[in-house]
Image (cartoon, rainbow, N blue to C red; front, top):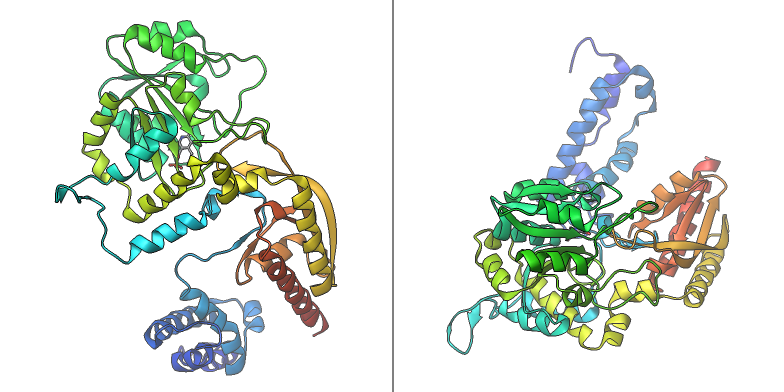
Length: 480
Ligand SMILES: *Cc1c(COP(=O)(O)O)cnc(C)c1O
């Protein structure tokens, strides 16, 4: 210890517990059954940080620090459990955003979850042809199903849609030109930007038209003997409105056919059932894109399809053969658990009604106002009972599809708006996030908003109890 250090600082340093002490107090109380070594390591790390903070902090901050071993243990044990809580945590999505990319996009249907469980702990015929007794292809388990469900001539599945686009462009257009409308140079979630993906693929981007208007002639003029593809990108997360013009897929296909150039359509969301009866601003389906003559169609597995993260490529067999044979295909290949879950999810689509009822994403999109209202009412009742200190309001509002799909779609929903006397809205939302399981809500103006559309019935008592404890904890500190 430094001789010049103030006595208080020295005293505080001496009051820090040992790693062993912190471990004893933390064990079992907060952290499940982790081995001692993991907890001791974490305790040492946390103590080192605390020690450094005591040495460095200002005199005012020093005043706020614990002075006794017991206080330190109380302060640091939570820190230790946070340090060792690796991995994903299931949580309650009360945002009303259905395909929430940050929250894992689509929850899986029970059948898909079962399929993962069945394959995960055993060997399987992933790349083994049981009839011939030799090496097979992992694509063989899903291609027939995708072809039959969509009418495509050939199909492939990869790690995600960004990979599907990158692989298709690389295999079909490397070193050559791809024509795209300026109105369709999309960015999805910050890291997927069409021009940059294009650059990575080695294809040269030829932009045509303007942001708001692209005409047939713009494409026609851009076609040369270096053109490899005409690309159409579904503007899944934005719309250009007002003085606009775009070339329809049918028209683009006509130009492509005339010039013998394939047309690729990045659909993004990949809806296999028609949701337009439920949602204004609904998406065109995958089947429609193929019927209209797109030679290659790409889309995500975990957006509107409601399956696991994956990218699906459908289209002409000669083009799919090139895509599957490209060396990059190996780098973006799908893993066996995802494959199992995707097959199980797709099988639900044999009966579109069954898909609508048992795929959580589709069920949440279709949930009607009456059903949502009774769920919201149950939540209000439960909160009033468990957390009388919190004021609750029941109101109509709108949910979002999310995941960059149907950006204008407003799904009428019922929300529960919360206000706590002693706590600001952001503070309350933070306390809910800190709950186990974490509860993710929206803050709007000075209220915390819970949208029941993305909540399970089983979430209701959990949220109510969390609010009850948060509100009483708040009172307790208020009194002291
Ligand atoms: C979402 C999206 C992508 C990226 O798909 P991921 O599955 O997230 O990789 C690409 N293009 C469009 C148009 C999209 O909407």
